[in-house]
Image 1 (cartoon, helix red, strand yellow):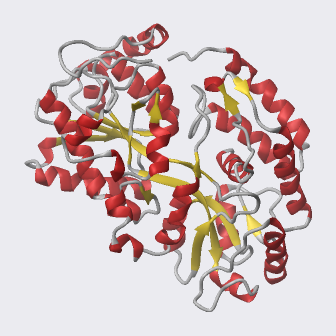
Image 2: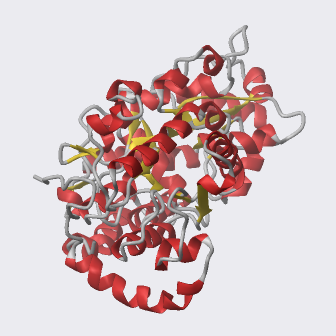
Image 3: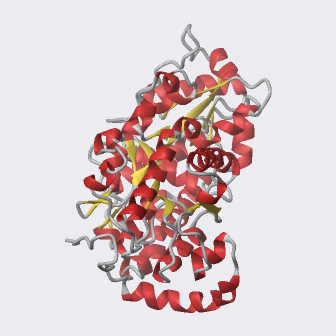
Length: 453
């Protein structure tokens, strides 16, 4: 069990030896930036930042980036202007998490950073994060009951709060309103007919195919590994006796082979029936639904902005239908983390106050599709009126996060490895058994390797 070191000058929990050794070369190579006064230099190699300035790192580009900047402006305005906040956006994925790790090891972390919940766990295991106690939350008027229970419980690690969830972003179903109407799959109020049960869903796919003359369902699987994984993990966890794919922190593969085979063979059947695309890239899958060549598009809810930008397109959104025993959807959460740092009580309050400000402004964040984890926003009349965002909000209650592993989580080696094989299954280039054998072989090195953090 971890023992918390008090936040302040009393000391720091030791950083793992592997983290320190693995980071030394990169930090040395970054020394040329030591004179830089910008955010990168400040974060990695210690350029001067005004003591009263809060340093915040994130990985949000596109529409999410714009919304986050709007939220940041509210904080800055309330705290004396732009000099109160230095916010920096880095490239999404592994490069970002490497920067957070290296900066923390170099004793120059940001005050607050964003992390996917599934990536926060390896950071914690590597000694990169400070825990957040109930007393810490109370400093700024927060408490555990303010948050979506599923997201909050998922971040608890070793009995400690390691992150504060901003949202849940689940895998969901988009549908073309005109196509579904012609297929007789809309209620009189325009809402989607209940498609629960695999037989009901497959019958619906046949009806949709009759309207489109092509696929009923589109899901990216060419030059794309995340989507095949998200689709599989959503359906796999709809079985009540589904086992973890990975166990013991990523040291064992424990996927239920019968359920795995049922899901992957069924997806191949959908392809053979002409219901699901054999091979299509990310943009192509969007186009299929937007142009009415498919009735259903499966993807993360963040693509809401893409379809809202298409003039004349009438679409809706809903949770993934429950085809088997229970509702389930693959999901992750954006969270706020406190990289390990010697903080005075005042600095801790400042960091948590910034997080509270972001949570208070999370209605802005919800407009981009993410389901608010902060219940005062989620339960508000304003959010309930926000459609189609609130139409799939229940998916957050049935979120299934990726299993904890140092090589796992959003944008990870695990996701790329497994997703690539699942994509080949959908394309008909390999059998379910062949894909699982390849997954086992390709992950073996990671299974055998202790966390380098």
